[in-house]
Length: 448
Image 1 (cartoon, one colour):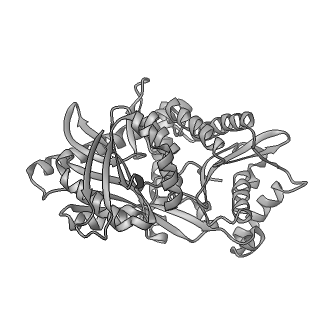
Image 2: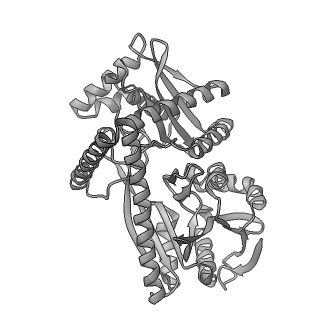
Image 3: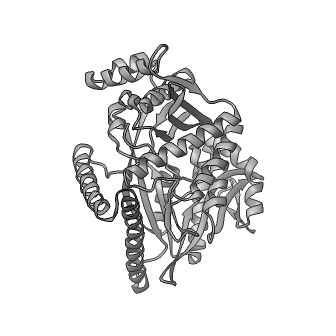
């Protein structure tokens, strides 16, 4: 652990802030209490919770170096910048060292030989006590400037519109001499929780209202489906097992690997569900038809918001036309109204069903901050970064072709792959024209 004392400002009215850099897992674990308290005070998102960040590190942190910056005033944690350092290499050649937020996308070569990109965190940010925003941001920016030699770039992804990073840290870094580039990436629809589900459905346009009412009727008393809350630990594990099975079956049949293609993501979700269940942060519902589960939906409850995270449903069931997945999502909205939540977040992705349910859209950003003016070495690094992104896309598309071929044979699989990718591209262009913001990268739900 490295500890440095600094004053946030020379004026005595500004509190003295101590900065501690946590680079050991044992010390990371010891931050749990301070971390949880600060996420509550700051109104942070679920992805900034200690459990999420800790489990992400345990499952996806191989080969990375912890670099959590803790800012304290009189011993109290008033700021957390949960970074890690990643040394990037292409064909064995190391070309840059990046500072990133825990939860960022990582590319992993699994033991099977498959290269997977894991990107489970929809929103990333630093965590700051609301009463100390200015001194914390100033102290953090000064620390990053003073230790600029430790990395070639600060690269922050999945940064929301309202984030502390975008609205406070980026201006402070620019004032400190950093060159900052930003680009808007994902569409993130969300719904302000209505006073009642009935009133909300009535407010929608007729065609959408009719489809949603059919889904509600099918899930209502005496309807085609039976909606069940999952409330005990054993039932939770069984529901998640079915969710994984339904999710993989549908995506593999469509020619895509699915989130659970490798076991790493499944283990992460299992541990996360266990942890969130114990903290009463898990939202989990199943839909049955004739006694069999045909849909499962999983989300999170955190800081006055519901997050619609993951779903699986049987699209070959005769009841799929009644949209059991949407029936479960309407149940989440109804729970949000009952619990007086602020909003239901549909997370990244511009799927059609989200357009039907809300017109409110936020965005994510990618931010790159460099501590010095660009030189010849930086231009070489830029070329290497581009080649790395090409390689990432190559591995992703190669895996999709592989799954298509496994499902439909080599020749038919390649034809289906080309057809699906051209349709996806056309759909993205059409939605860009309708919505303006840059398209998302898909979601964990898919068509309903």
